[in-house]
Image 1 (cartoon, rainbow, N blue to C red):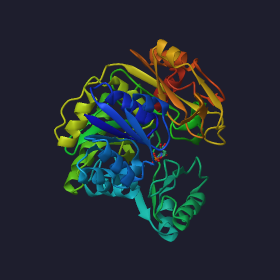
Image 2 (cartoon, rainbow, N blue to C red; image 1 turned 30 degrees about the vertical axis):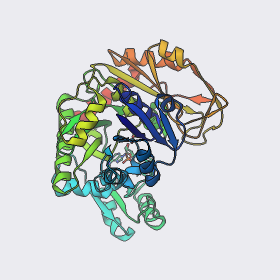
Image 3 (cartoon, rainbow, N blue to C red; image 1 turned 90 degrees about the horizontal axis):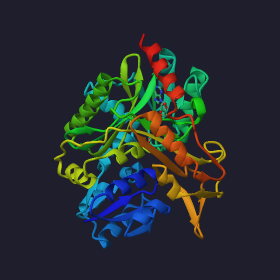
Amino acid sequence: MNVLLVGGGAREHAIAKALKKSDIKLFACMHNKNPGIAKLCEDFHLVKETYVEKVVDYAGRKNIELCVVGPEAPLEKGIVDELEKNGVSAVGPKKNAAMIETSKSFMRDIMKKYSIPGNVEYNVFDNVDDAKNFVEKTGEVVVKPAGLTGGKGVKIVGEQLKDTDDALDYVKKIIENRIGGIPKVVVEEKIVGEEFTLQGFCDGKTIVPMPAVQDNKRAFENDEGPNTGGMGSYSQENGLLPFLRKNEYETAVDIMQKITDAMKKEGREYKGILYGQFMLGKKGPKVIECNARFGDPEAMNVLPLLESDFVEICNKIVDGKLKDVSFMKKSTVCKYVVPKGYGIKPMSGRELRIDEKNVEKNGAELFYASVNEKNGKIYTTTSRALGIVGIAHSIEEAEIITEKGLKHISGEIYVRHDIGKQDYIEKKVKRMETLRK
Ligand code: AMP
Ligand code: GLY
């Protein structure tokens, strides 16, 4: 079977590795050559993932039967609709279902319409005067452009925003400058707690959940500095997290199932990977956002643990016949290697020395993200360069493996070494205990 992968990041490298465990021929469309994906492919095409027509044309030329779409941008452009029109099955929601990620107001409105638990107080505005009352009444708010901003448009009172006046200024700026592509803004109550990610395979009817993961978005240790695409993540052998109880995980799964049901009732059947970003606050898990794809880095935590055949899962998603999926009962710790200055002023174009063999010898897995290859050498870009993942029976052991792997990467790089370390985990558990009192 010929399978096409769309996307060229570390998330897609993890998808590629999972697909290649089955007897398939892999092809890829990616905007930049990912050396890890390239090695696993029969052939690849360097093309922007959002150039849907070109991707569909390539799929036709290579007799592709199944396509897995990694990033959200081509989903927003309706790549799944176009592939299907051309007889190619695809794992990913159609344009009208991908709106669960591409429009933050759509996601909140669906949750409200179907009284799905886990929603927050929110309102959608298209002018600043209307927002004034809500912002002043709510106090601590989060301001989000309603459209897609690549995870960088959200600002929070008490963090990037000083007070309500600051929040209203940002509301105005989003509307006037159409940040996120549309003059619409979502203002919501701020939830205090610990974040976790729950990803699920979804065949239009049923959510089959994966182990919970915690991503770390802040650039620097101790969760300081600007928000990034994610600096690293971890998961625990029992599928929960040190601060997340079983009943809370189950509540989150139930919320995702209710979202799936609601999408079906709306005539927007959701097939693909559904990603729930939750904040575990005083009142249980609240939905922060939904994504229409695997998380990056979270894909690197869950996909290496898959015991079930991934290609079979993909086919069952397409056919609407998904059943149980099994994962190894192991912990994972992923740390991203980024160029020095990432998040502020990244040092791009610097050579990265990568001893892949020794990374693997230490039991760690390497996933390439954004790098440039020139004359056999690898260079940084302005984005995250590669992820190293340790897998073991406990988070503590997995973290040690990750660090051993990292010793074989050098250059002008930065890594958040605190992710997954014992004192870092204990701090989170304590914070959650205090909040629960
Ligand atoms: P998003 O792009 O929606 O994931 O938001 C980026 C980050 O802002 C999230 O990872 C959270 O840390 C934070 N955030 C978003 N919405 C809220 C909220 N309602 N309460 C607290 N933090 C939030
Ligand atoms: N890890 C955050 C995301 O993939 O959106």
